[in-house]
Image (tube, rainbow, N blue to C red; front, side, top):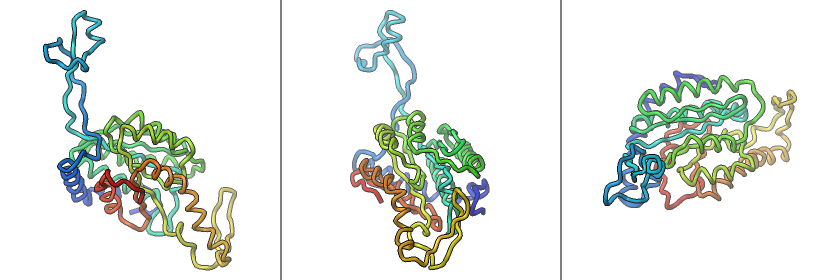
Length: 305
């Protein structure tokens, strides 16, 4: 298992942990359906065909194009979707290539997305993914079964390699706009980001996405982002070269966690305003509990975690 790069073997191993999560997700979906309207917007319907109008047909389902073309009234027929789609929106920005406990945030994000992919496939639903980062404009259309999960896993490995060494950050708004185009109504969208790439345009894009999809977020974090290291001088690598920081200074120790809080504050505030659920996952934890928290969330009590 690599702690700094995403490897296929590591993501394949997440399948062993997914069965219990898939069972939990199915239980939650069943219990929510029995008590109140599902937290998902429904699996919806797929257009099947058009046929000649028959007495009693719903006029709202008229196929006006076929009617105009043939000169005879036609109605649309639909089949119920039997699968739900889940879309993982994975940040591959440089800010995630950081970690002081066990693994990088980028590796933790990919492991979490892999667990989600396996659990979705085992639940009989479709899994797709969007990756965004410098030089990366990639997506995996939702697909079912083991093949659908494997396509996502291979993409996570490729995306990690593509952005390695890059410095620029791609804004979250671009990923949300792409998600709107790919996600069908009723899709469960899981954002995996540290929140540092949230920009002003993201809220409008998120609002439009959340109108038709159920959106939640796993926020990647590292313990060092919440508390300063032990007092000493530390050499850090900045964009312009090495930087020496004196963590013995009280002011530096106080400002250190405040800086990271400020970086993700806009993201957290945006989620809170939209009433969307989020879970913070640090680099030393395992992702099962975080995903259970999202999957078991009651939409009637939305809050930001």
